[in-house]
Length: 307
Ligand SMILES: Nc1ncnc2c1ncn2[C@@H]1O[C@H](COP(=O)(O)OP(=O)(O)OP(=O)(O)O)[C@@H](O)[C@H]1O
Image (cartoon, rainbow, N blue to C red):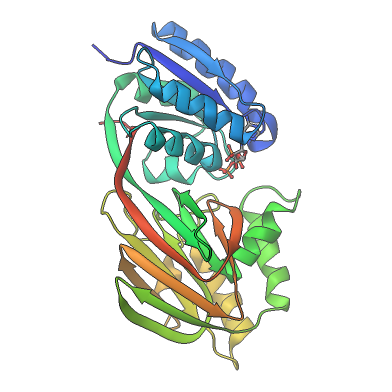
């Protein structure tokens, strides 16, 4: 018998341009059919949604907080679970644009009934969270990938575009950002050891393998290893734009890491600075700029997964 008897369903009505509401109705029927009681929570904004999620995690009669939304909403619920002591498991009904956490955990995407089955099954995997500390001390957690430099510039541009949808939005945004591409001197320290002092195009710090809807930027990252994976691309003045234009599409398959200008690092604490500075985005939201420290909160929270 499942121990999931009552859930709080945290719905982001704005995820994937409003799709979240319909997905939530479908999920509610699924839970009702399986005898699980549902309390629907819809915040008036992201801050209100996180407050509701913390209250639900602290409530004795809620067995899990289930998110209907994308990675931004999931991060909000995971933060709430950590704030409430990290014992309430988080379920995921994917309804975002990217759904990269769901991909990493092999959760059903575009199959609400199957996602409900996973949640009712009650299996829990404890996962790591990433954390960014910006200059001045402000912190933000992330669940998928923190991007800096060219790929944060691409993210910033892509999220501001209404068209096209899906991965082609990133390709178009990348083409536009290539026009103004220049080198930045990056210094990267991994677990106290200086590793990089070079002209770099981008450095991404991954908790999951993919971001942006399956782009395998840190293809060997694991949610359960207590480490963060870094992928960076060196800048070569002569080859700059052409090389990046060649490397970038290979991110979709993860084969970019085989290119001689691309390097991978792994550690629990990554310090990155750049001259000139570069944007930092986490889970697809721009949060500030370098310098920043990226570290891991190992096994911080439980997510409902199959088996
Ligand atoms: N009730 C709410 N009202 C307004 N904003 C919300 C609410 N709940 C969550 N949000 C915010 O909306 C943003 C986007 O939501 P979400 O990640 O669910 O969808 P998405 O952007 O379509 O998907 P993805 O992150 O996979 O690209 C997140 O940053 C999240 O914090």
